[in-house]
Image (cartoon, rainbow, N blue to C red; front, side, top):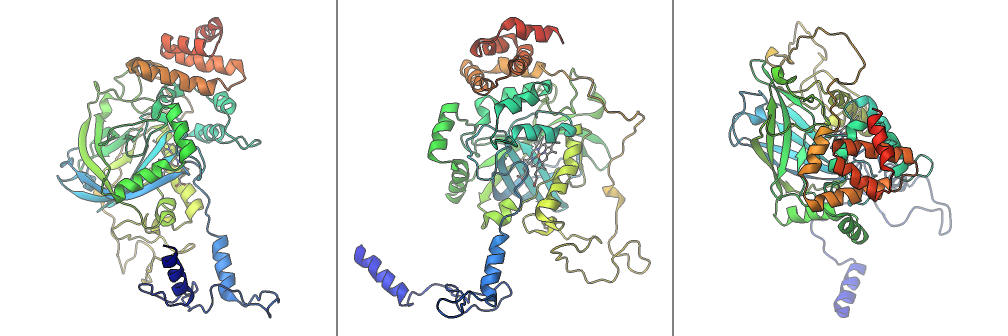
Length: 508
Ligand code: HEM
């Protein structure tokens, strides 16, 4: 063995090692490089010369390797794949990707944690982002969801504050349960989300075994302009598997990138993970028929009122060749839509429709949609132009519309946005049917004995770190309002004064 290694070293040193397909090393501008191991100096001990343009370019390119990480969802992994439609759903939507049985659409999917930074452990409690880009024959469609069916808040105006509370302290640079619950003690609508997140669902065992949810209601529009509200779900064909708090801690001590490794190892082995996509539907005229608002993203739509219909399947089958160029530069946005799919009036979603592309113009530059992972497979025909790193390659002198001489690109009213009659005052107000606790209580009662135990101990693990008793009492009063047993168990485990907690409920 040692002899073999020495022989190999001798061959490499003598320059006889024959590499397949050797090509000249070049500068960024394609000029062959003479020496990539020693800088050019004035004599043996002389200073390094600025005229070594290869060295200067190499260092300058290196200096710019990092781009800003995503402000949320910084830690993620992605893979290429394919979506296959189960049928023709044109009765509900003119979106072409759902227009015929067996129709295949390429996809790129990125799964991420939300709060923690780019190099953070994949074992931490957090929702998992579940973002899918469909490269359809009518442009790209992004479905940017999470692995839990609801969200913490229902208005985009609260999002930056929520993220500030979740992120590390601006003084101590560390996530702090005191700050998190100081914020959430005045956000009762988060009770349902916390009842999902503090189950073991908040620490998935791997990323193949999570479900995905669109969370919001979206509008599907058919060729007649008729609207159906839909909620999406991706059901993992691998089942759902989560870590208990102890298992997550054990994994974290062993490997803080276990989920990325698991996904890529399985795809490389040909063990392709898949998810079935289903939708639930509600007609516009039924929106006001329930004890909750179906446009409120802190709520699920129970199966009894909106049964699921399976519409297709996604399979992830290829690891990207280059992590940075695909996974890091991928830009998913709730505003990346195709004809037949529109945002609902959900106030959280409406804010997202602005925020993602805005951050992507900052994170990746104004031409981010032309980066290969983001570029559609169809032609892009419009008169938007220029900007940093423009590569549109347009040749015409007519870069405006209308033009009497060259009506090159034609708009077509079959792709008009849907219309809606509005006769209301503008306002800034919370929705009237808040119903903050009922679904959280239903969820709690649906859990097994062990699931309840883990939910309580996971919550106690974080709430137990909070020093301000009023904050803890307020949080527990929300869980108590969801279900008295839920609240009483937390009161006992956190050694709280039950009367103080119940008084907060009565004071409401
Ligand atoms: C008003 C509420 C929200 C705002 C303002 C917001 C904003 C953002 C921003 C700025 C990013 C970074 C995008 C990038 O740099 O490419 C992001 C990423 C993401 N968000 Fe949100 N978000 C909101 C709520 C949600 C909700 C409710 C979900 C799930 C239903 C969600 C899922 C995701 C996912 C999956 C990503 C990562 C996409 C990727 O993999 O690149 N967000 N969000």
